[in-house]
Length: 164
Image (cartoon, rainbow, N blue to C red; front, side, top):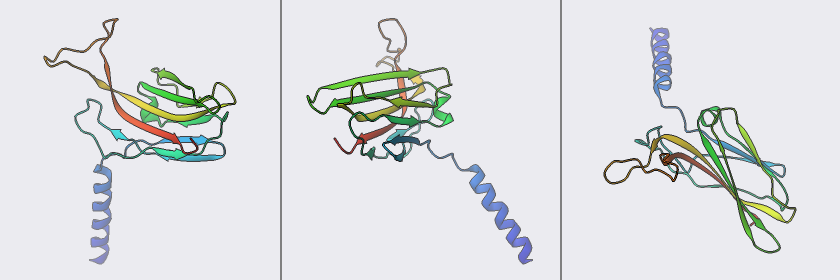
C-alpha cells in the first residue's frame, strides 16, 4: 500500500511539473571576467495577451574599452530580436547608440564592442519581437514610412553598467 501511494504521489508530481508553464527565458551577459543572468523586465506571450512578472535590470561592472558578450536562449534566437547598446565616452561624456536586428534564427550571441578604448558600455537592452503589431484606435495597423506594420516587443532584458 505504501509503495502504491508513493508511486501515485511521484506520478502526480510529474504530472503537475509537466503541465506547468515554461519559465521565462533568461539572457546572459559576460564582461571583464564576470557574468550575470537577467530575467526579463517584462515577458509576454507571442500575441501580448498574457504577461508575466516584471523584473529589474541586472548590473555588471564593465571597464572602458571592454566588450560585453550577450547570449540569448534558443527561444529568443529563433524569433526576431533586437539588441540596443548605449556607450558613454569616459572623457567627454558623449553618448552613442548601436542597434542590431536579427531575424533569421541563427544568431544566439552578440558582442558589444565599444567604439574606442575611452568608451564604455553603459546599457544593453535585448528585445524579443512578438507576433503582434501596433494598432490605432480603429484597429488599423500602425505602419512605418515603407508601409510595414509597427512590430511590438514581447520581452525585454536589460544590463546596466554599475561602473557608470
